[in-house]
Length: 280
Image (cartoon, rainbow, N blue to C red; front, top):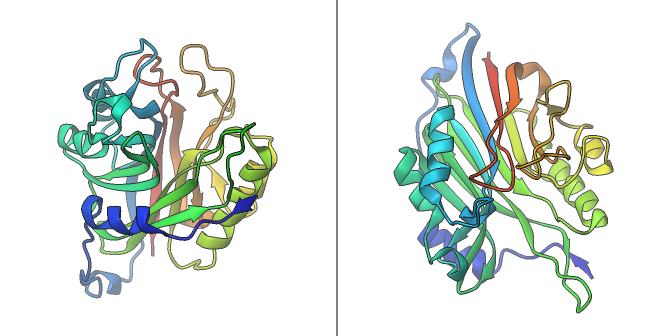
């Protein structure tokens, strides 16, 4: 049975311990600037496979080095473990923040092996707000194991004080119908307020021609290279399933976009884009 889960105790309890909000910042002074300003944003999307590399080793420090080399402003992470048995009870989100010097917010989607599993965001920009949004999913059956899905949304402050929304998400891996509903939910939840420039990044588990991506493209622009370079599996990539999108289209210009040649730290390759954010 497909459902959109309530923000239940898993979200309520972990919000207090895993997420701190930076609220109440005054934007009024910088918003009065009449001239258009631009800001270059270095954006990374990375499914980190709960810290496990293709050599079978769990190595968060190795992932941090991959991220550091890119010098990103915004990082969307998927498959992040916090206190999970398989990955040594490490708080991977916090550890990556410590190693990279970036601020972090963690968005759990489920309990797993005594800990939590979900998405996260790293950023060097001041954080104004954070939200966790559950997405539709089909509950597991004896014949098919699925996982709850969600998105973490962080609003950051740009150089001239204006807000920018950044989303990290991960669509269902084994049910195409779920991915369709998740894409529809993303469009419904995050495109109603057209006044907030937004970047959406994640592992959509769908190729560029698949229906979930086509649904997203009704509201978002895809920052993808012309060849749609594959991202998974990382050792010999065959499929492009990791993406960076943005909206409104007029507010951004793609300066560069590529898949990072990294095959060891995770079973996905990171996706990187440099976006010029036009701030009027």
